Length: 362
Ligand code: AOF
Ligand code: ZN
Image 1 (cartoon, rainbow, N blue to C red):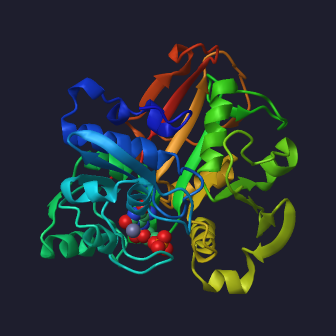
Image 2: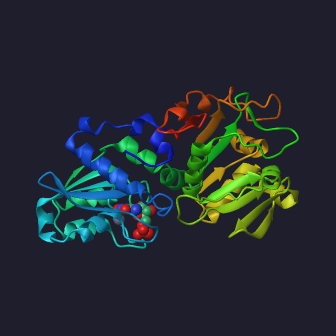
Image 3: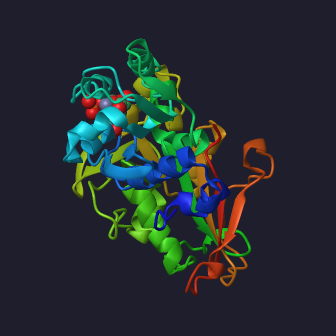
C-alpha cells in the first residue's frame, strides 16, 4: 500500500504483504487504496473505497472523491458498463453502505435495486444516522453481508470521522520538529530549519488532510508560516492564531475575525482555551485541527488531553545546545510507545530525521 507521505505509510498495520492476504482482505485492501485518493477532498466525510468483484476479478471501482459528491459504492456501480453482471457479483466497500438521505440517496437502496447478492464491509458507519442500519437493511432484504474485513485499517483511515461522530469535536493532531537535544527553536526565537525535505512533505500532507491549522502568536510573528499545502491539492485549511487573549481566524489569508479568549464572558464559559478552540472549530464545520505550535499552544492541548495523534520529527543532525523546549511527555502515559521510523532509510532520501508517531488509539 502506498499513501505518499501520509502517516499511514509509516505504520506497521498498513505494511501488509499482499501475497499473504486472503481474497476478502485483498479486495478490501484495494478499497483502502481507492478510499485514500479522497484524502483532503472528501473531508469531513469519511474516506471510502469500493470494488465490484465477479468471478474473483475486479470489474469496477469507485471511491468517495469529494464532499457532497457520489459515495464510493454508487461510483463503483455507475462505473460498471455491463450492469447485468451485478446480480452475480460481490461488492466490497470499506465503510458500511449508508441507509439515510444526506446530500446523496442511500447506497444500500442502490445495492438492493441492482440485486447485488453479497456485500463485504470493512467497518460500521459511526454516523448515528447509519450505525448498523445500512447493514440491517441489506440483510433484511436477503443480501449476504460479511463484516469487519481489515477493520483496524479501515477505522484508522477514518479516525477523524470516528472522533467527529462519536465525540462531537474535531480530530486534533499535534506536530513539531525538534533538534536532537529537544529544542524546537533557538533563543531569541528565530526561524531555524530543523527538519528535512521529506519531513516537510509529510507536513504538507498533514496540512492537506486537516481543515484548520493553529499556531501561537510567537510562531506566527517569527516564522511567518504560510500554513498551507503546496504539494497535494484540495481546499486549503483555515488558519488560526492563538494569542494571549484572542483567537484570530484567517480565511484565504485575510484576517476575518478576532475572538476574545479572556474577560468575564470567556471566564463564564468555564472552558480552557483548548476546549474553547476545539468547540469553536467544530461549530464552524472544521472537523480536524493541526496544531503546529509553539509550546504554549501544544501544552494547552496536551494539558486538556485533547490530542488524538502526535507527530514529531526528531533531527539526528541539528543540535541547538539551548533554546525553547518541546513539551515534556515523560509523565504522560498516553505518549510512551511511539512508532519510530528512521526517515534516512526511506527510499532515496537524505533526510536526517526520525519520524516519531503516537498514532490515534482506537
Ligand atoms: C457510504 N459510502 O462512500 C460514504 C458514506 O451527505 P452525504 O449523502 O454525502 O452523506 C454523508 C454520510 O454518508 C457520512 O456522514 C457517512 O455517514 C456516510 N458516508 N457512506 O455508504 C460512502 N462516504
Ligand atoms: Zn452512501
